Length: 53
Image (tube, rainbow, N blue to C red):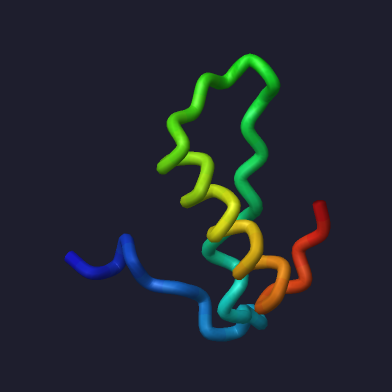
Protein backbone atom coordinates (compact mmCIF):
# COMPACT_ATOMS: atom_id res chain seq x y z
CA UNK A 1 0.00 0.00 0.00
CA UNK A 2 2.87 2.42 0.67
CA UNK A 3 4.67 1.70 -2.60
CA UNK A 4 3.06 4.74 -4.22
CA UNK A 5 4.84 7.01 -1.75
CA UNK A 6 8.22 5.35 -2.00
CA UNK A 7 11.23 7.19 -3.41
CA UNK A 8 14.25 5.74 -5.12
CA UNK A 9 17.02 5.86 -2.48
CA UNK A 10 19.67 5.80 -5.22
CA UNK A 11 18.59 9.22 -6.49
CA UNK A 12 20.09 12.28 -4.84
CA UNK A 13 17.28 14.42 -3.42
CA UNK A 14 17.28 17.56 -1.37
CA UNK A 15 14.67 19.35 0.69
CA UNK A 16 13.79 21.71 -2.18
CA UNK A 17 12.64 19.01 -4.62
CA UNK A 18 9.05 19.16 -3.40
CA UNK A 19 8.23 22.76 -4.31
CA UNK A 20 8.72 25.47 -6.90
CA UNK A 21 8.12 29.22 -7.07
CA UNK A 22 4.54 30.31 -7.64
CA UNK A 23 4.30 32.61 -10.63
CA UNK A 24 0.77 33.93 -11.17
CA UNK A 25 -0.08 35.37 -14.56
CA UNK A 26 -0.99 39.02 -15.03
CA UNK A 27 -4.59 37.96 -15.63
CA UNK A 28 -4.92 36.25 -12.22
CA UNK A 29 -7.11 38.07 -9.71
CA UNK A 30 -5.68 37.52 -6.24
CA UNK A 31 -6.93 38.57 -2.85
CA UNK A 32 -4.48 40.39 -0.59
CA UNK A 33 -4.23 37.27 1.58
CA UNK A 34 -3.43 34.98 -1.36
CA UNK A 35 -0.84 37.42 -2.68
CA UNK A 36 0.79 37.60 0.77
CA UNK A 37 0.96 33.79 0.92
CA UNK A 38 2.57 33.61 -2.54
CA UNK A 39 5.14 36.26 -1.61
CA UNK A 40 5.98 34.43 1.63
CA UNK A 41 6.29 31.08 -0.18
CA UNK A 42 8.58 32.56 -2.84
CA UNK A 43 10.73 34.48 -0.33
CA UNK A 44 11.30 31.35 1.75
CA UNK A 45 12.12 29.36 -1.39
CA UNK A 46 14.59 32.04 -2.49
CA UNK A 47 16.28 32.01 0.90
CA UNK A 48 16.37 28.25 1.49
CA UNK A 49 16.48 26.84 -2.04
CA UNK A 50 18.12 29.58 -4.11
CA UNK A 51 15.04 30.29 -6.26
CA UNK A 52 15.39 33.32 -8.49
CA UNK A 53 12.58 35.57 -9.73
